[in-house]
Image 1 (tube, rainbow, N blue to C red):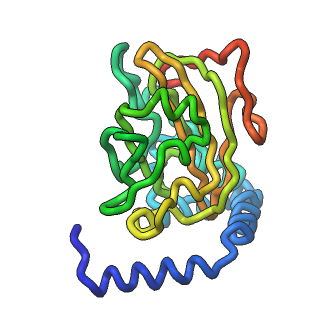
Image 2 (cartoon, rainbow, N blue to C red):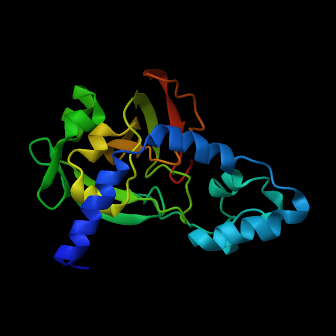
Image 3 (tube, one colour):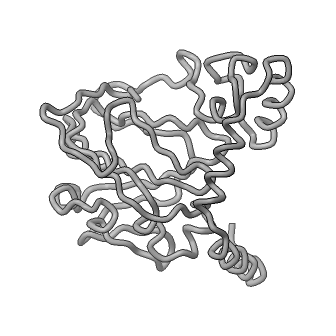
Length: 239
């Protein structure tokens, strides 16, 4: 939806104020609060209020609400069986729930963050060989809202060739930040996962965010990064 001058001004003021907040400390505090265990007798009420506040659809959750010990557990909930059927072979499937912020084709090593804001593929991936392999390919940037399912799935039958943990700041990553902060994704902490599949080479970039600041994997992905020999096989649609 187009914004007037007033809306854009308030966006810039809000973003300017965010730059003054110690977001890593804020993230530690929020994660600590979210991990506080809730007594079983209070879970339906307390977690139910929080879930409604962020807009979660609990009908898709794997477990009844009372089985989640904290909001942190609810936040990374699995989905019930069959909630996300996986498309057939020959297609790349969407790895996450969320809103598409931008999409297109990486041309001459550049991607579009937002209108009039571009960033470099090699700066995002911090791996020249991987950047060269995916240059010219299609890309999509997906924003996971607090309400969304926060587990990430493999877009194709693939093998994990390498991972790279990239240190950086923990920004808020809402669309307003994407529209206004130059180089947001190359300045933010992230995990780059190099996949080889029948559809070609895939770079899956998991971007950290303020208040969350944590990216976990079901395979070993140590801080810093590593290559896998042999590569780790991951099925289409698997975590």
